[in-house]
Amino acid sequence: MKLIAAEYCPFSLRCVLALREKRKRFELVTVDMAEKTQFGELLSPYGRVPVLEHKERPIYESSVINEYLEEVFPEPALLPEDPYDRAIARFWIDFCNTRFMPAYFNLLKSTPGKKRDALRAELLEHLTFIEDQGLSPRPADQPFWLSNGIGLVDFAFYPFFERFADVEVFRNVKVPDQLTQLRKWLKTMRCLPSVQSISRSRAHYIEYFRKFYAD
Image: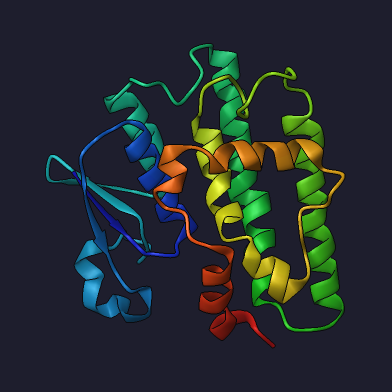
């Protein structure tokens, strides 16, 4: 297998995490999206990464790739067995893709002013929704989002928190102290070997993203 990815792309990291949790050997091809015209044949029809090549066939989009991996390599399972619980998992992945992620990137790309203030409030609302509706209902001893084992929901969200220093430092949004379950989940995630394999220091992310988001 080959995964075409970008180094700081949270969508690419989703697939790296899933592949490493599945303990599958793969070649990681990193492209510089600033020079993506050089890599057109490697990118998806949308002109972006990640792309998984398996048996000489391409699969596009991180959520689709990770569900493909789950179907082709069912062990260890990263989605619940029960159909209802799978539907709940897909809801949270959709929430990440359609609500949380746009708020996150729209805030980063915003200019100072009332619109940025509104986007900051929106992202904080989403963090509170994750706490109240996603993580707080879990049993007290359940470490991950939907079960005692890591899953695709955890990997859908975590890459954005891996680089969360960018919104903390440059857009003044941090995970509020009162969101105790979210903070607990983040602490658990950071201890995973698969997460540690892609982890970089807070200082590294601040320095890297300064050139894009400092204003």
